Image (cartoon, helix red, strand yellow):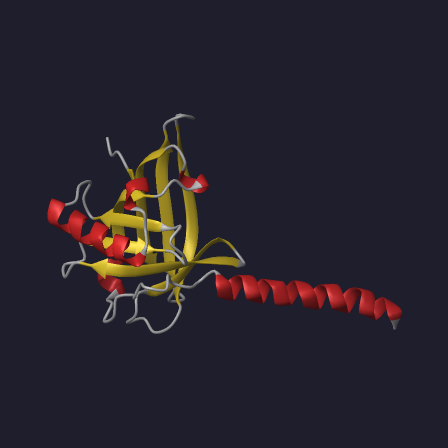
Length: 179
């Protein structure tokens, strides 16, 4: 019986820890609201990363793109690619995204290393699905995306104002080069 407790307690704590980690990582910043009436089919395809914060997993990366496609099981395939200009090599990461609630709400969770999931929340998008503002589960994560390598100044200012209102320090954004 004592051996059973030595196994059951650590396994139970481990499972509980994963559940807590999983549930905490897919949130949305307090002042942010995900886009409603979201059309995931219009969102699929290639996006260029215009700006982001300096994340370890994207450090020294330019020419960053994200390509979203539908998986047969209804989830979304996420294929990120970028050029590390220090190491002079292309990097690619493939993950999966799932809707947190209904498909009409742009709140997703994404994983590149299961079972760890992170929040991916589209909080602003233009009517034609050409420009998008994405935030993670806290004000440490933000991305500005575009279908082209540039973004109009009016959209840029709209996204920056929205991000600042939520609590992001937009002075820390890295503006990604595409050459």
